[in-house]
Amino acid sequence: MAELDVVELSRLQFALTALYHFLFVPLTLGLSVLLAVMESVYVMTGRAIWREMTKFWGTLFGINFAMGVATGITMEFQFGTNWAYYSHYVGDIFGAPLAIEGLMAFFLEATFIGLFFFGWNRLSRLGHLVVTWLVAIGSNLSALWILIANAWMQNPVGATFNPATMRMEVSSFFDVLFNPVAQAKFVHTVSAGYVTGAVFVLSIGAFYLLRGRHREIARRSITVAASFGLASALSVVVLGDESGYTAGLNQKMKIAAIEAMWETETPPAGFTLFGFPDRATETTRFEIHVPWVLGLIATRSIDEPVEGIKDLVATAERRIRNGLTGYKDLERLRAERAQAVPPEMQEPIHDLGYALLLKRWRPDIGNATDEQVHQAALSTVPDVSVLFWSFRFMVGLGFYFILLFALAFYLASRRELERRWFLRLALCSLPLPWIAAELGWIVAEYGRQPWIIDGVLPTFLGASSEPIGDIWFSLIGFVLFYSTLAVIDVYLLVKYIGLGPKQPAAPASNRLAPATGDD
Image (cartoon, rainbow, N blue to C red; front, side):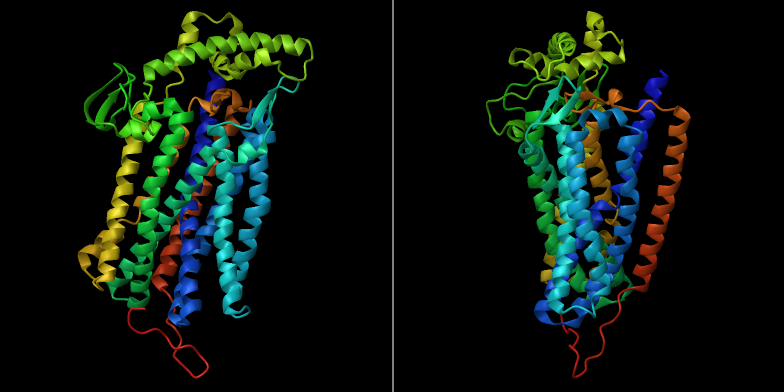
């Protein structure tokens, strides 16, 4: 039981640090592109008000970026401290995207963010605009490589098991790089970040209009946020559908748990709009079904079934038994010091990860009983209620953002932004994109359990063997440190929002004239 406690505490520590870090990532992604858009308008129009807008929102971006860096660095160290066997088992594959992210993306972003802040009077307008776009590109590239690494955990392609080293090794970096899950996760995640940035700008702009301050900058900011946010919110829904399709191909249990679908339905499967999942009775009470929707999302067809939880458990049980055969084959290969897996043994060894689930009940898995095999198969079902409700709240917020931005766009086009009911609605919407982002993280990562690498390595086997007191000490330390950073972040954001943007300088013969009207 002590070993299990170490695993659960290690999971809790990584989950908390990831959730803290993900408070800053979406806003960094969204604001970086919005800054580039605003400065592009400044360069094209020459109106000084757009320069001051860019500098003001850039200050808030810089605060958030610094906090994101501080909370993100420690996460990578945890792979070595808390998840040492995981790092040993898949380090050749997982480490490469993380290293490229640091070398290609983070250094690019960190270098040019300095030029962004200190280059306003040292670079030409076009030169500074290039710097701002490079900051935005660096932010997105950073997300790309992190998500490539994460997607491999969800869909481990381009790798083979080496019986001589007892590790997974890269067989095709091309497959790792162009993993379909990575592509779907990247576009969906960055679009969600753009929504977060747009809601942030929309809400702060609404705050200024409610207070009657910085009205010209606030109206322009809301107009940019409304159009950018509407496109982004629509993209999130469309690209989220693509994520559902890739999960339907590679993570069938996750889809079944999200839908609380216990039995395989006659195709095309319906989508459960509402209901109360009951794991004990394996039923969903008071469910409201929308015909065909799940079948179209998960299979892109009307004649393919979406497997239910019970059938998937039976499939898992078959793969466990097949993996036990692979486990015995592996012992023979190691005794013979084989350097590769013969073709006739590849299928059983491919299911080795399922057999390793049995190590939660006994170390000598070759002697597992039928009851233990069945227990291991049942362990492949994640917490249905958590996934069911997290997904529905996330989707509900996604459609809310579409309506919010559509309303903002409509009012901006009619020059009626200063309706107080709308401004209050926009201001109250400020925390919602973070809630949606965290729910999305829960759906993606909690839905993968019990796997740290889907179908390859169970989570409980990936943890380090370290004293439980050390984990408690670091867990408490991280919570206190990250909470302090969160308080500092909110304090600084509130402070600089309170100070507001500087007013454009008065027009002079050698200076650009400030904007007038609603440009």
